[in-house]
Image (tube, rainbow over all chains, first blue to last red):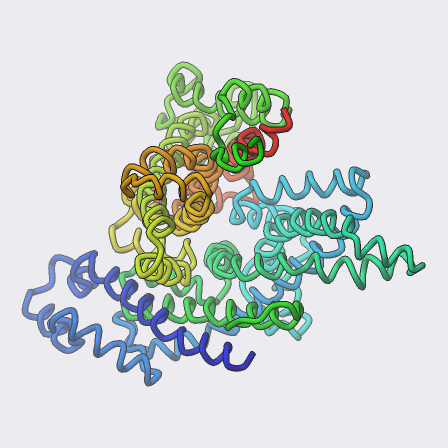
Length: 312
Length: 294
């Protein structure tokens, strides 16, 4: 297993290089960032001087290689706007994004696993029908709109929870309260999807021969469902979890904007609007690496829960 | 003999369209979905006759009015009728959904097809490209592309189309792989047909059904991505009545004029539900297992 993990880790390098090339190329499509920053009325000499200072007058390939070399050593450059180190800007915001996405993932699993199992054990019951309606609603509504609905209900009308900003780390009371609405916004739509998937896989597994054998042996229904059926039913769920990682981080971008959350998503949107290329490049590269690492972790977890899986 | 003949039958051959339509009509949710999609198309075409006001008309005597008989969905901060703006927004939603899916399908289906059929190094390179693009969250990539190209509906369509083709490619690759290994394709190859003739006569026709299903199921995703980009300010620009942009307009007035943001969101939800019902129904109706049962 560790050989596979090491090989996957090594294979990350061409993937990350490919991502870096795409991101780097994109940022140079839209025109001169210095002119865009200074506006049309500034003298060309000043623009040229600033461009030379930042190395933006070198050939594109030279700029790319220089950027990759520095990124590999932890230097993602400086913001064109504020001159702050990009790596510092990212490190100041990554905790906010990670705490939000992890809590959202926890909410997704907390809701979907029991709801999916109960729906499968009692198909076409009131609970099952309600969970279908719930799934339909959350999957169809745009998540930023759901966030606004939450703000309207829980913040404006009932005044139960804070509606903007991060009021502290997740492990403090104020911090935890400020995490709830954005995490629900991010975590409920995938919970709907996962509930239906778990229901579907549990229904398949419950009719397998080994489940019939377990029941015939006299095992309590609870043990049959939780110990035998659920473990096998969760295997495709883990696969989907890996596939949904990019969605989770992408969804965080919009959620952070709705709730004025000081995370990487907001940093990225602000930097794109202001054409702050080094920040956009660094943030997208960092997010892509998080996605790739998360997928690797999911693969390793997959191997752990299913002993039949052997990767070459 | 019968068993051999059955094995040689292509997976979707023998599922005539009449029986597909019959199975579709038996699925109540699919019928509801088709009804919703039809309603959207009619609304988009006849928007000038359905909307009681011009979507850009400002009325400073009716600022931030709640829903009433005069303005069914209320008015916004410039006195514009929200119902009329939502009605006209249907045009943009359908345009964006169809255009994005066409771009995704053109890129993704082509690459997936080539990758699945030819295999080997071609498959390896294309799969690696898919992995690289998939490593960047679709919305993030679309944002970055839209930011590079500048705002506006057409740049947004291009941005989402270029970002979102990978799933299409993977699905098409999977379909082609399963068809490529069929016995009848082997027989066609053994009989001396060229690759291109096999692709055109046997493989491509058998991917039409899943292709139709994927396009129907991807339209709602495209509409949701577009709404997100417009909400963030990188899609449709004011005063275009695109639904995501309408929600963004309503954000500042949420506490005392909730209808500006809520009504377009309901429109998005109904649209997505309609296409999802129809797409799920099409997928079930075109399922060859169900075709053999009927």
